[in-house]
Image (cartoon, rainbow, N blue to C red; front, side, top):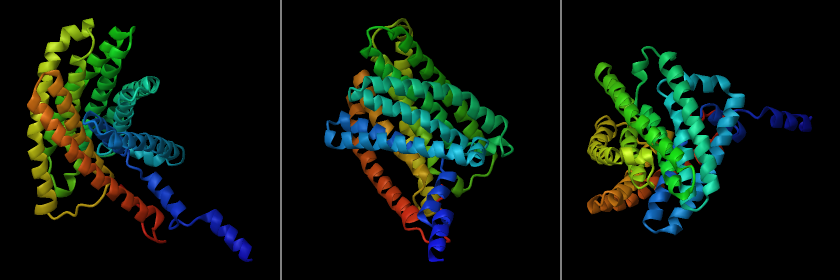
Length: 368
C-alpha cells in the first residue's frame, strides 16, 4: 500500500510541488522574457568596449545559456500549452513581446561575431532575419487586426517598440558582419540599410499609436510598466545600427545613404537622451506618488536593455561621428547599466528560487 501511494505521488505531481510550479511557470511564460538575453548580451558588448573581459566574457556565457534555456521553454510551451500561447498572440498588450526573440538572437549573434565566432553569428543572423520577417506579419495581424481586446488601441504600450528593436537588431548584426566578408557585401549592405529604414519608419508609426493610446484612454499607474523604457531603447539601437552602417565598407547602398543615416542617428540619439528624464519621472509617479511596490517581474529586463543599448550606441556614435563627449557618456552609462543588470539579475534568481524551488503547496506560481 505504501508503495502504491508513493507511485501515485510520483505520477500525479501536485501543482504545489516544484515540478508543478515549473509547469505553471512555463504555461504563463512572458513572451518578452528574451529581453533577459538582450540586456545581458548588450552589456557584455559594453564591457568589452571598456576592455573588461573578466566581466564581458562571463556575461556572454550567461546570455548564450539564457537564450538556449528560453528557446527550450518556449518550445515546451508551444507543444503543451498552445492555447495560452495563442492567447498571447491575440493580446495586443503581450504579443509584441515575441519580437524579443528576434532581438535577442541578433544581439547574441553580434556578441558572437565580436568574439570571432563568425559561423555562429551567420547562423543567428539567418535565424533572426527569418523570424523578423515572419513575426513582422503574424504579430500585427493577430494582435491588432484580430485581437482579444477591443478596441486594440487600448492595448498599445511600450512593448510595441520591440518591433522597432527587432528590425534594428537585424541591421546591427548585418552591418557588423559586412566588413568581414570578401564577397556578398552588397547584399549584406542592402539588408542592413533596408532593415534600418523599416525600423525608422516603424518607430514613427508605433510612436503615434502609443501616444494616441495615452491621450485617448485613461492611464493608471499600474499601466505604466517598465516596457515603456523600450521607447528609449528603440532610439538607442537605431543609433547603433546607423553608426555601424556608417562604418561599413563601401557599397552602393551605403554610399547612397551614409550621410542621411549619420545625421538621423544623431537626431535619434538626442531624442533618446531627452526621453530618459521623462521615463524616470514616470517611474517616480508610479512607485513614489502612487506607491506601487517595486518587485521583480520579467518586464524589468525592458529597462536593462535600453540602458545597455544607450551606452553601446553612445560609444559607437562617438567613434563614428568623432564626438568625444558622446563616447564619454557611453562609458559612464556602461557602468550604470551593469549595476542595474546585477540588481535585476539577483532579484530574478531570488524570485525563481522562491516561486519554483521553495514554493509551498497550494500557493500560486509566477504569472509574469
